[in-house]
Length: 242
Image (cartoon, rainbow, N blue to C red; front, top):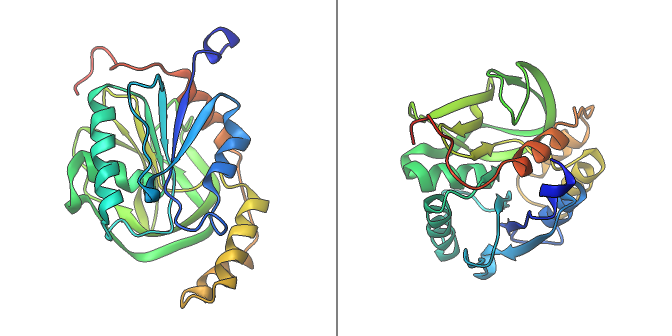
């Protein structure tokens, strides 16, 4: 991304957090975007107008489950569908990844995980792509109890783990990507997040405590992801199926 194009970028960051003192996605993404952006609390009913000049949309993670579809979730699904109809580049992370699948293909394609992933895990990059780079193994922080499943041939599965076959996808012919993991949450931020969750005294606190005791490994893939995502422009790719 060169300076001539960077000044034209304006990101709408859809903040899906429920308790911003616990989970801080705007703070996490702001460290790496380095372009103008505006954040919108979806759970408070705030979503941007798509005539406001935004060029890219990021859907963040959430403490909510994709299976709990409150009114704000349905509103965000409709917002995503409208953004897709305008061919805006969209990147969804964790909950945002799942919400993309929900908007694109419906509720049969998201579900509760058989085994949650919380902590730092090796992620198998199965297909080379501009977003994730060459095939190989990368490490990033994860924290999810839901997942995307059974995507059709219009999607390219870019990455997987043994417990989550759809760790990343690309919608063929479109500038649309979903990533289940949290590359935007670096090691210090992940430790703070895990401790915040432990302090809540949830019934899942033991899982967060176990993750906090793991040896953290982060490959720093967020920089490549942001660079590639912000380097694309609105519109469809030519010569590809929708």
